[in-house]
Length: 411
Image (cartoon, rainbow, N blue to C red; front, side, top):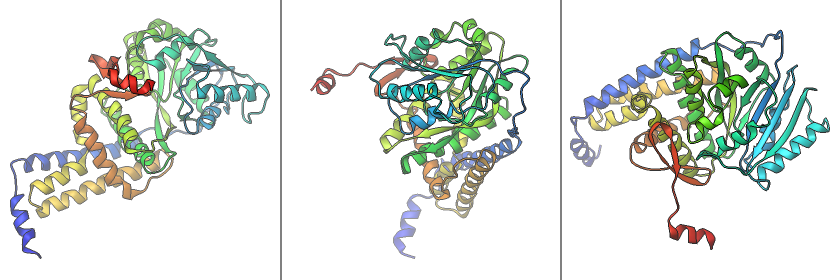
């Protein structure tokens, strides 16, 4: 072997940080094994039993922009095997929003009976209201839509969610359990635009999803996930409606906390929905994940620091580098990689969806670690074309553009 290799290796001989990295890597491997165990014991979704009653449901779909696959995603909410009355409300701030045209197409098709699988008792309408409320545009949209709610059960779902025909039936059944005030559910990523969207979906599938399941198993997590939130209209009114969370970036988390605050349970359903990813560049992916990371850190700083144990491969590589490429570092790195690949396989088995290439797993893990590290530095979050500063408890405030930026936009 070239002598220059040995000279370079001597320069990076064991450093004082090596034991720290070794310890973190081992702890992260153990946590990953526990996540695999948690996934295996998580309740499996069986065939939904026929409910004695099918309570009337209003589905709220706040929209903004024409996202890839929007028509298909929204139509999946119309194709429901549900016996009770269903009202679907699409909401936009601007009548010229491209999403409004998609919603009108669905409304007209449903009225004409041209959506296969739509139940007879389903109606749909588009609510256009320019009124703004608070810093969170999505919640402001929900406030406007809430005036038109007709039924006793309210289901909220993001625009990039796709669901199965038994979606509403499962939610109604879960919400009927004693003491339950809100039902939420996990989601799996669905890439729609190549490499970057695949990496985004992998973060959901092999980062977010198993961490939620492990947290629930440890009784350290009380998730309320915006992919789906179902609650009674009376519960929504009891917490002060959507106005209570109008300035929250993590509006789903805030809604769950409010429901728990009035003594009702928030439960996680036993199924997952699909979550579309359409990132076409590293910048889009980075901004989205940085927004999530900084939001979580602002809401639960100590828990976020604890999530350091979710990066076994990154810590193992640091141990390998700082330990002078010792054999133990090589073994630990291979072990960490095996843990992550096993976790990926377990998620794919437990929650059927698109299985991602194993070769992308190391890249995805290192990107996640980079987001984790950078999220501790001061910065803003980018959401729906605007920059926001993060305050205490997830409260956000829009950041005004600099004069030269406004002039450039006007030009």
